Image (cartoon, rainbow, N blue to C red; front, side, top):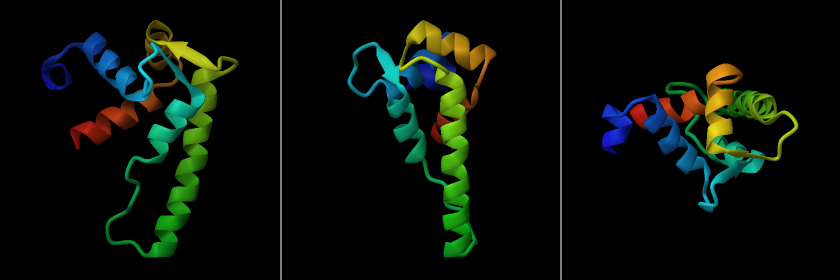
Length: 103
């Protein structure tokens, strides 16, 4: 937990990568990222159920888009690849988890 709040960028990337690496094999798949992001709370406070449902559908489409951009033609990413891609190409899979943890 210390690295989460006081660590540098590399430590935070490592921490978030480990969240995605559910089977602890040193690489993450599209499905790993898609599943983790899909289960982050998306409920809007003060909105009705239909609005929540529509927001969730939109969010799933957005998540799918970010995962496709992040992985492009790769099925798996190792930590260094993940760091490079979230730093240079698509940071949302990193930012979503970081914001959820910091919330």
